[in-house]
Length: 405
Image (tube, rainbow, N blue to C red):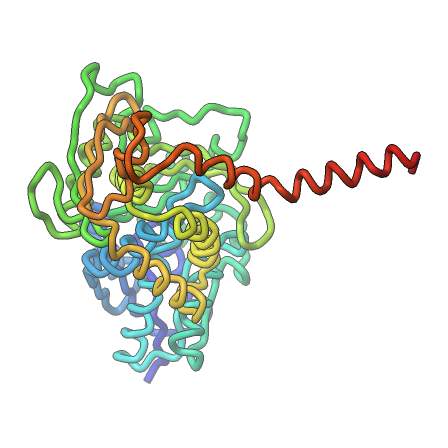
C-alpha cells in the first residue's frame, strides 16, 4: 500500500504543479484538501482539477464560520494590525487551515503534510509552526525549498510537460490569496515599488476610487462585547455580516492597502491588500473603544495589539502568549457594546456618531460649562504635582549654572 500525503490544495498554479511532482518524487498517494475560508468561486471545478492533476481524492471543508468567529473576531477585538496597515487576512487563516490539514492526515493515516508556500514567504512558517504545535509527529514537505522549479514560469512549463492544464496565463499569474476577510496580490509589476499598481486590472473585491459612487453611503454597526452583531439594524451571523460589509465597502473603494512589509524570513516584500469589510469593522470598533475604555486600559491594549499582530503574522497562533493575550482582550471587551454610524465615501470612512450604554464620556465633566463633578481649581494642585519632577530638574540645572559647573 502506498504511503499517503495530505496536500494543502488551492487549485492554483503552485499546488496544481505539486501533485504530479509528489507522485513522481515520492510515489505517494496524494490526497488533496481544500479548506474553505471564504474563497467563493475559486472553488468551482476544484475537484475535477485536482483529480485530473493526479490526486486520488479531494476533500473540501467549509470552515468559514469558524474562521470569522474564532480567528477574525479575536483579531478585531484586539485591534491587531501588522505594521500599521495589514489586517492579517492571510495570516489569520493559516493556523485554521493547518488545523484542518492535521485532521485529515489523522483521518487518512497519512505520514506527511505538503504545502505550496515558497521558501521566501511567510506561509511556510505559519503552516509548519501550526502543524508542529498540533501534530509534531507528522512529516512536512515543502517543495519550493527542494525542487528544481525556480519560478512560476518553470511551474507552468512543468505542468505542460506532464499534460496538466493550469488555471492561469503567465501575463496574469499574480500570486493571490483570497478568503472572506481579504484578498492579497503579489508578483509581476508589483515587485517594482516604483510602479503604480494597475488597480483596474488587479482589484477583485474593491471598486477603483475613480469608479466609486459620487454620493456617500451611511451605515450603522452594533457591537456586543467587541463583536459586531448588527448591520444597519439587521441582526446577522458573523459570516453574513462580513459578507455584506465586503460588498458595501467594496463598492465605496474602502480598504485597499499598498504595503512594503517585513516578512518573517527577513526580507521586505510588496503586496496589495483588499480588506473592505474588515477595514470598516476595525475603524468602527476602535471608535467604540475610544468611548468605552479607560485611559490606562486603552493605552496598554494598544501595546498588546502590536504583539498580538506580530504573533498572528509570524504563525504563532497556537502559543500560550497568544491565548493569554486573547484572554486579556476578552476582559477588556466586556463594556465595548454600542452603536457606531459611519459615512463611506470614495475610500474614506468618516465617523458620524457613536453611542454606548457603557460610555465613559460624561458631558457634565467634559463640557466648557462648569459642573458639580469638576472644579477648575483642582487643576492647579494636579499640575503642580504632575510637573514637580520637571521643576526639580530645572532647579538642579540652575544651581549647577550658578556654581559654574
